[in-house]
Image 1 (tube, protein in one colour):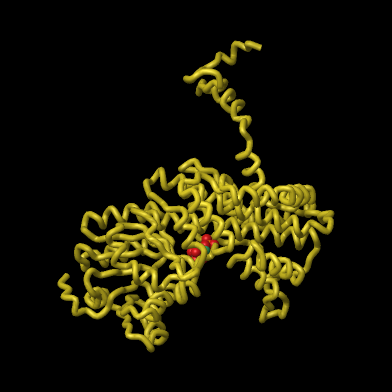
Image 2 (cartoon, helix red, strand yellow; image 1 turned 180 degrees about the vertical axis):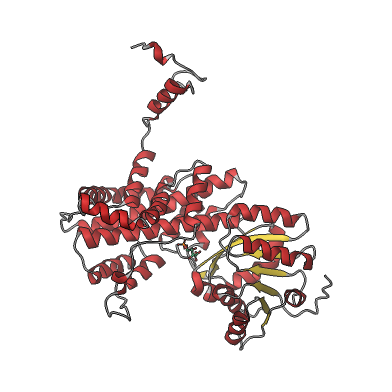
Length: 474
Ligand code: 6PG
């Protein structure tokens, strides 16, 4: 389509739901001329109303929208992940020219992003998969963004993305992540870590509430004190506020009125699925995904509580809350370590060339998993850019060593009281396994060879071996 650059707008957005509108308004605040497209008149009205101070325009006609953009056109998609992304691309594609850029900013599965970028590459169109984190507030006032795609095309959007992103010590919370679908892979992993931290917060709440008999005010105070220390994070901060929020309907604390069945949109599950595919263990993230599924089994849980009885109180001494802080620190560090390890592995396997220090750096602000601890992660990868595992970093090692005694006390006390702590317990078992020089997997290999002649390797010679186990050479 002819585009003589008399067109007015530098960036366009498809999808003017709250996220799309907020990101466009953020761009407009930063001085960029922006336009939006949405089939819904209502969304267009909201957009023009909210943006009336700015020079922006909304279109219900995709041709007019595309024509209004300067070349090379940059079009961001903020539509629900899945088939809608494909149908928007199919609509846009005949209207675009070589060199134009499409940025999918939804939570698309990275394999969809790979496929789309290859299909569009054939037509000379650059396709970016760009995870955005920070929710509606983040989109409006500064998100963390994870763009992956063609490096040269990134130059066109770099300044705009840096301007609209969150900043930490003046550094933008956006960086070029890598080629192909790496941006969406990194955002998916971010969400896996998000699931794990949310589950750890839920387990700390469970221990305080059912193990120690604390009320919501007392729990709020514990979380608040943690948020003033090394456990400071966005999720800790919003969680402490949840405990004091009053329900308008009943006047009770709202948290007590909410059903104990957690929903999900799938990014946590994808993280676990992919981790299995690339054979990288992330059991604390897996436990968080499974916990959401366990929560959905409400009637079965109620029935079985009748049969087997509820959990009991923890016999805690005065150091227990301190031990719980240490357990939370340890498990939180472990959840981040598992996510980073997955990125380390995927980077090799999918040739993403990820810079883990840069990823930790852009997660320090704007995103849902932003936390003081990310500064330590950033420093660990600055010190050693190819660090295989965070447990290997000297600074983190020292803190983990200090927190392990308290962690063991919290995990064993909770287990003895029958309090479900799948993420906390998995973090500790994962740690114990990773520090086991010789695992019992020799036995697994013997069994596999016994029943399936799958062979085994020996500690004293190279090669693969098979034994005639049925000879009963006992
Ligand atoms: C973010 C969030 C965001 C969204 C999740 C929620 O980084 O801003 O992760 O992407 O809130 O998709 O996921 P669930 O609905 O699966 O909990």
